[in-house]
Amino acid sequence: MNMRSKAEQALIELMKNGDEADRCYAARTLGTLHSQNAVETLIAHLTDEDIDVCVDAAEALGRIGDPTAVPPLLNSLSKEESGEVCTAVTSALGMLGGEAAIDALK
Image 1 (tube, rainbow, N blue to C red):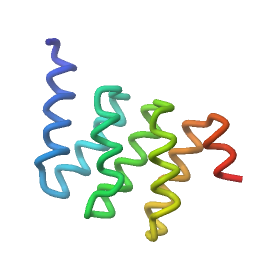
Image 2: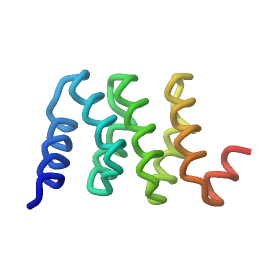
Image 3: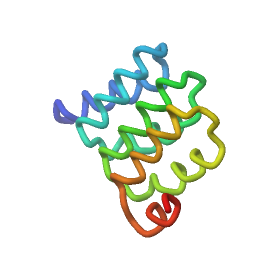
Image 4: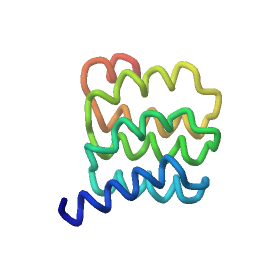
């Protein structure tokens, strides 16, 4: 396992077990790394109890660019009440593009 993979795994573990600040830091870093390995974990945190974690998870998914994140982001957008999270999800969908995302943003 190379250094990048080890770092990604440590950050994914931090997303799962860290406090709010740790989860935010990990999500932002995973997005910066464009970590495909973190997509599933980031999707799970779209419904985190902490709004800042939800925002950072959505933004990270947009940066990573994996189209499998579009349906969960759309689902989050339809259920979310926080304007801050909705803004982050909308931005992520815009970064991801694709027909489903574009149709939802119209």
